[in-house]
Length: 149
Image 1: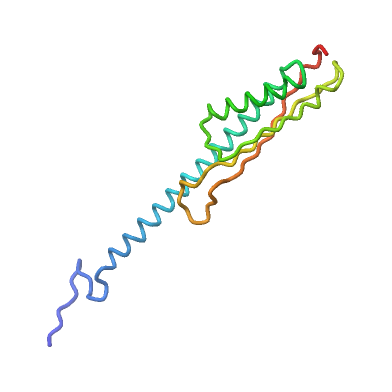
Image 2 (image 1 turned 90 degrees about the horizontal axis):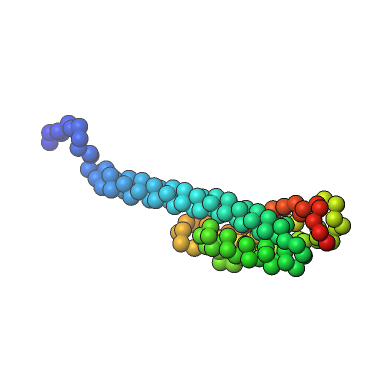
C-alpha cells in the first residue's frame, strides 16, 4: 500500500472536528471576558454613583437650619439622587449623623451621610458573581460655623 504524503491545508484523520472545538472554546472565553467587563463596569459606576448620592445627602443636610430638617432633607436628597443616577438597588438605606447641630454656633461641625445600596447583578450570568453586591459610602459636609441656633 502506497502512502500519500500529508498535504498542507488538510488535517490528518485524527484531528478532524478540532477546529469546531477550538471555536467553541474561544467563543466561550470571549463571552466570559465580555461578561466580566460588563459586571466590573457596572460595579465601578455604582461605586461612583453611591458616593455622589452620599455627598448630595450630606450637603443637603448641612445647609438645613435644624437637626430634624437636616434628617428629612438628607433622606429626600438621597432618594432623588438615587433615582437620577439610575442605579438599580435591591435595597438601599441612608443614615445621617446630624449630631454636629448640637454644637454651639462658632464651633466647627459637620454632617455625615452614609448610603448603602445592594446593587443588582442578577442579570450578569457569571459563575462566582453574587446576585447583589452591597456598596456603602460615607461623605461629610461642614455645617455653617456661624449659623443661627
